[in-house]
Image 1 (cartoon, protein in one colour):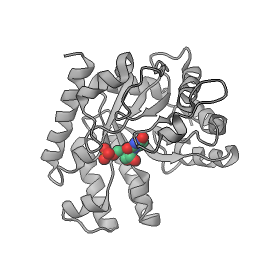
Image 2 (cartoon, helix red, strand yellow):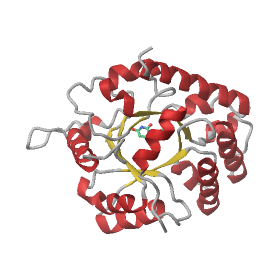
Image 3 (spheres, protein in one colour):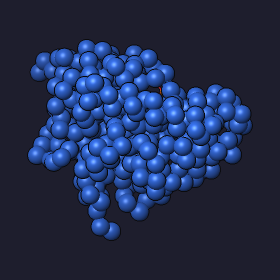
Length: 281
Ligand SMILES: O=c1ccn([C@@H]2O[C@H](COP(=O)(O)O)[C@@H](O)[C@H]2O)c(=O)[nH]1
């Protein structure tokens, strides 16, 4: 099977065409209830496909949160497969948020599940955890290079518990988070227009001035909306790297459903605000 154009190049193009917004598909039980849906696989499918119908033809990226599909077992995962397929068919790139990470040989299995082009859950990119050691991700890096997929590696996450690990200082004086960013810069060296190996850095993390975000790759930035960050925070948090930031909004958009027009309007509002701040307006 022929490889896709590298993820970084595809992402740069769709960000230039549509703006950088990523809308998350997070079918929380509470949102299903707010939408008047049952907390079952029928509700899950209605919810997720409505979100795709509303925004997949206008945003750069959609990020299904695998956990909310997995809780329904095989039938939930079957819904996830359809959601990925429909979002991609509408022109959005799909980042599967499954935060996989394991010892190298098992990591190879996860990579096959999400990054092999003919796999049922093939996604344009996958979120992965480097906390078994960055090198444990090597099978995923290798397969992504082979197939044209991408990875988003957890570096400085948006949750308040993250710093106890990510800000820990190593024997060489660098923090763990900074080391992850340095590995990504090395993966992406020389790639144009953008490397395929991104970082996850929360929009909520505050002052990043001591971190080198110049990784020549995308930065997935959850935390806008329900977690309290705003579009206006992005230039302050990310500085010059803001051009490569893909801000994720899940609940901030999803709470406007089930009306398709209202979902679309909410996504358009976030997209407009983000475009303005990235353009420096
Ligand atoms: O550091 C991280 C990494 C991933 N996430 C995920 O992003 C969304 C955020 O949802 P909101 O409703 O916009 O808060 C969710 O799927 C998280 O698992 C994150 O928040 N922080």
